[in-house]
Length: 348
Image (tube, rainbow, N blue to C red):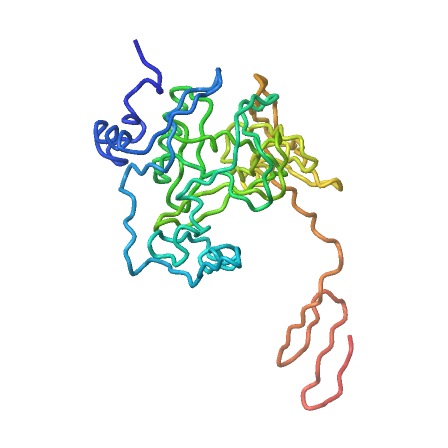
């Protein structure tokens, strides 16, 4: 009997030799990572909960002493803003202080990723968007909420995994770009950040920080968030042909389809923006294509390039061509020439 993807050896199939060697080596890499166990609500697809990123192709970087960024902050009991906060040089460059090298010691406020100073959140069942993440306490603008954790794989491996997920009919996949070369995949291993839903008007954003030499992805509040509100981010989804996914965020500036603002989507579908700051999709006059828009329905849409402007009928600029014998003005019926040996001109 064929087992499901979630019952197979840990990513031996999806990773392959290029992403961590053999299946047993890959499994050992997983077992050596930091894992946690939080009770999940009934109905949530099971996944392995971790507290930090897992690298399959390499180990975590060991920061050299010469590369450690040391700030000039000194903690003053009379000034609570002196313990590596907004004025800290490391904070301004999105770099966390290294323990043992910061002069503020244990009072350093710039180690939020390392100390996992997360905001209180919890899962809830949304209306039409699966599971989501909401604030379980009041969150201030700019506050660190949670780190996006998962398996760090190359961009090429991420494409291969997408095919594996599709072959095993895995509907809920969670991948986010870390940089130009690496992707964080939290489908099989991750934390609660994987449940953040998309919104065209989000209240959270992603920020990249350098922590002990590694690039890590954090979720930060864009504005004050009250307890009980859903936490959302903008996926900046890049549509690469195939089925289009309906956006159900309900925002006033909703783009209707995920990836509707991407260039490739605009090339195949006529997307325009009306006065209410809302993007709309209109069918073209070209060949039909069927796209699955979710909820079990299939809509017939037509591929269309962005319409070209018609050629102007205005009179073209007259080009002047000079000759030793005569002067001809193109686009005009009037012609003049100069008589040899005389400065006078005759008009014809």
